Length: 202
Length: 254
Image (cartoon, rainbow over all chains, first blue to last red):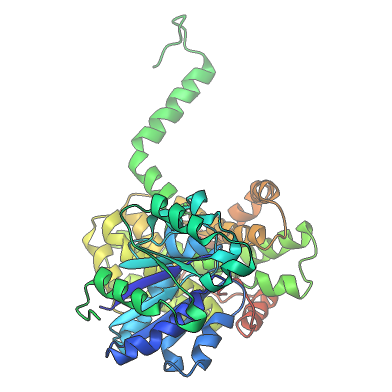
């Protein structure tokens, strides 16, 4: 059975980018991977990953949830479990990344679907997000604050974000990244290795 | 007989008393039926719209009245001799204690679902329910059948595994079929709300108004034999579902 990790967060925060950045690292570590994307209305994300050249396109599945993305990762993850079982039966991967469709700050992953999950936010969407204490920010195994390079362009106070994140998640890890430039992605991989105990620590 | 505060039991109180006792007598079955029909049952129903999304894009569902016509067609020309009849016959099979009969109903229904979307929606949801069955009901035949579904020794259509579960939990044949047929109406109406065809309150009013059609489709289903079972005659829905499968941008799986 594959280790299952979830990647959630609002639209445009960098979830697909994170998947693209992690794929070469997994490959380098000898971890066999498959990917599930929960596209809200289109197949854009799954096709983007398929076209990336980073993974066998057949190992990427796009799932239409017919509902708000959080329904398909939390209330009723059946369609995603079905996709996981298909990929496990066909490819026997070591790990499956399940990217949720862009969703609100309250989205969380069911423990019946994933073993570990990260929630991604970006500073350009507002530096008050951590203070709103959505369930995604509070409950995720790892919080990733992405696009820190944009903070100065959108008048986001990065120090304030760091302080708010520390208060919101006093005992859970958080990372600040600029995934476009590959800044911080290795730390994400290390957290996955530590969190899922799949024995491939960096 | 339950007495009122004044010591005299009114007719209404008596009726309420009988109703209460009936509910208590069938309480376990009633609870199971409510659970099986609940939208919270995690079997992936939310992913399916039975072609409604494509029909909406094609302008074929411009108003609530047309939506109602779609639902009625799906019930009478689609579900009654298909999923509804399968539910009735699967209930019989479960009560007879014969796995082979369950599988024969399942295989017959499989032959009658002519399109890939119809197969997908029914099999996927059925498989998820099969995975859930051991946690819902302790019945050896049902668990054997559910294992056969998960091992892909039988197609595992939702109507069949639902009815087998219902029968194993003491739900009557009639109630089982009613639940199955109603489920088709609620699946389409739920999708219609999410597709913004009509508001939630209006969908509930429409569902209440569909009661005669749900009952009519259920009667057709209850009177059907294995040979009477038939494929969907609602070509517009089937074609829309097939076209939907080719769409690049879509909210629903089917």
